[in-house]
Amino acid sequence: MTTTAAPAFTLLRPLPKTAIFYKDAEISYADLAAHSAALASLYFSAPGERVVLFAENRPEWVSVLFSIFRNRCVAVPVDSFSPANELAYILGQTEPVAIFCSGKTKPVVEEALRSLPGLSARVIGMDDADFPAMPVGAIAAAPILAGAADALAAILFTSGTTGAPKGVMLTFGNLLVNLQSVCERVPIFHPDCRVFALLPAHHILPLMGSIFGPLYAGGSIAMAHSLDPAEMVATIRRHRATIMVGVPRLYALIRKAVMENLNRSPAGRLLYRLSAAIDRLSVSRVLLAPVQKKFGGRLRQLVSGGAPLDREVARDLTVLGFEVLEGYGMTECAPMITFPRPGAIRLGSCGNPCLPDSVRIEDGEVLARGPHVFPGYWRNPEATAEAVRDGWLHTGDLGYLDSENYLFITGRKKEIIVLPNGKKVNPA
Image (cartoon, rainbow, N blue to C red):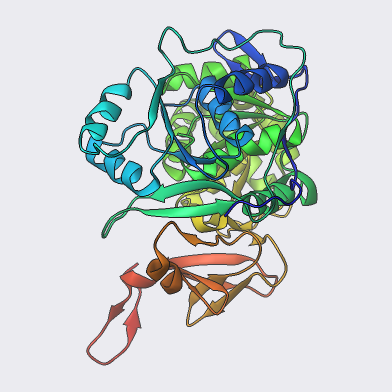
């Protein structure tokens, strides 16, 4: 998959600006670049070889990721909660030259490797005494360049509800299309943004929205160090996050907590009703300023993906003064198929196609095509041929485009029930 063509874009510039806020630390772009260079020297590899990243979110996770690209290798991020048998399957499929792990995940790696006696991969522990420390105040380091557009950047394994997980191959070109969409064509991410990073980065949504997006745009990451709600809010406030990337379950919990608190007082209920009646974000942020203040006063946009967001949750969060950006995508599109434009949100919709003529509806199913669509599943041509037909990715999701090209998702194709009279019914 690798090629000698010129790099498509710069992944990381060694700037003096803070790239990651984590606990008490402020890690600059230059620190990340220097650390990635030190980590890249820990293993021998050839371009295109795989490197597994098996650890929880932390700044070292990010510098390991960039070290993989610095060595022209392919990143294989794995869920840090994966059991040994699942990890062993991924290791057997990808045959990595190195495995980066944490103290928590290292025993799982050792157990998985015992079932793969033929695999010779160097295990590098992020919590080991000889693991290079993150530099502070680094001055000089070479920028990290992406491979050519058709060079393989990462393999992300999707959880297999039926059968073994499939490895989604993503190229640097796939990544770039997404980054250009949200950093250039519609600058959701920009140099002044600070993204609260909570979701595990082995998933494509947080990988792109919480890591690549802000760093490509020159912004910053406020990385969560705890899943405790009070600690999360404290991190958002302390580091003045402007964007949160989350999933519907998270936003449902936030909405529940805020609304319960608001409804305790007549004044809170009145301000909510007034905000809903006026229905303007700028006014809502003034009327419900105390809600905004609880989250640091700068949190403006809530990006949602991974599953449909309940319309009532989206509505309440909007009334509270947050702009809810619900997109639609798949790992196979790195991930965006459609996304909403700030200032042009349509409640219940997943926005517009990220590229012209890249989405169509066939027999009720959403189909996608374009440079953001993956080249195929790792070592699985049969699954690739089933997913991509005549250049169109068959998503398996049902939906429709309205007259203004907004996409609405209505269900899953596999869930459709066929009645004895032949009529097809969506169980929802």
